[in-house]
Image (cartoon, rainbow, N blue to C red):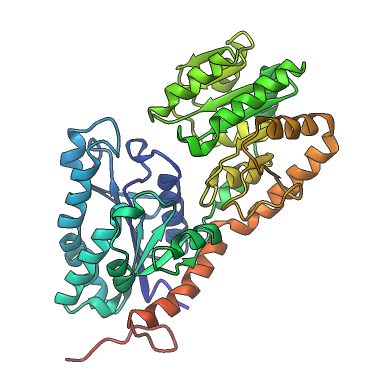
Length: 435
């Protein structure tokens, strides 16, 4: 298997660890996977479309951060996806020569292979350009290129034949693998992961304070992009149905900046739910307590500010259930994170392969709000069931800690190197060509 002596890692992703660069789960994946690789001793570089006010290069938790497209980002301060097409073109045009000079040539001189992990449709063209440039430089046999799909966004614009030729295509679940067959590729499944820190002990007092501030036996939490696929309307409909039956359910929510958010909030009000927007900063559990206690028992509290990871974990543990009830979910990082915190994840039935129905989570099969409402009522009325699910969820989530996922990734690299004619002798040391 590869070791830090023989392998270094480069990840290329639009999203990254900066708040400017996070719009969904991709930024979290990029940050945590790279940190976990660095913790194993691998020289690791993460290139992403970063905050224009921060340094171009920086060391963070052992990872070398490289912020690309900063000139464009200074003109598009709303976030990583503003000016998306310009940034896409810039990435494909200017990043390959930078990596050749600053990563591939030094690695080759040191006798190491470079694994390039390219994330999502934004990097498909980049992957092709990089492969061609490495060929011209005589370095292609020193690089193994992986292109990974976390979702099916942008699939219609990808040259699948070229991508499949120059890289090893991967994805995060069997559900995604099956979706991708129609494009003429057969990707290798390497699941998503969570940091080991996500399995650490939580502040029980903070969790209890959030639960008490909700003032209800049924506090639900939903976080994610504003997209119809996330079944926001189903979640809201379930809260309304429970309240009509006399159970004073509440929803704490944190959406994105997508236009569909206006429809979600309008729908909530149209079915009789009171919505309060909360824009105060939330730095710890006390901020969540203030939002719940200071909104006069509003059925829906819409959080309008960034939530730190530690706070999300505490909400996950405090809530009756985390509504990750998507109808299309390639992997479902939100649900897995909820389980790691000892929360009850209520997930859809697509790519969330870590979820066992009523074994460690609740799996929703339909679009009907009544299904969610019924499941929530069951959790309230059967505390023993809820306790069992929480215990199993935390235990099973440990199987997806990044160190275990990385073990599988490193083993897969052996076959991918064979496929791409990156030759390594049996001991894993790189064979340096003699000219």
